[in-house]
Image (cartoon, rainbow, N blue to C red; front, side):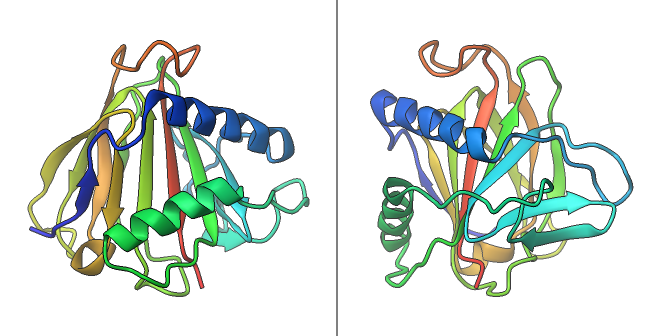
Length: 203
């Protein structure tokens, strides 16, 4: 089983509230959309991004783009978010981490959300850590090995947790089995659900 760094409850409620506000500000420039897979099937979440590039999915495939579907550039990653990513990467032993992008996923409380097992392998550089911040409802997260057929293990990610996939776990298959409703702190998300911020060094 691959080993990840799971920082449980590392973010205070105040820090989480600031991150939620940050996501709302980003969404005023890069609105949330519901992307589709290459098959045409819609995702169970809404997405936006900030940084040099944004992750996108449509009929043409999975990739990074420097522009939103509306043709506008993605907003810059806020300094405070980049600083948090660099700090967390250093905790995982990566001293020269450069956060290029943050993918923001919102899973509504009214949807039975899940995300199938997959690898994060659309980055140019597949070595730097993937940093995942959880806010809102608890998530049952599945993680396996570097082969799809490897056995998986469930991890509960709670609001304020940060998960770092680094080293051997960087290319581990992973996914979301379920979002557990009504588990979020009431002060965070007005309509419940889960907000996931995934920071990557792409280049």
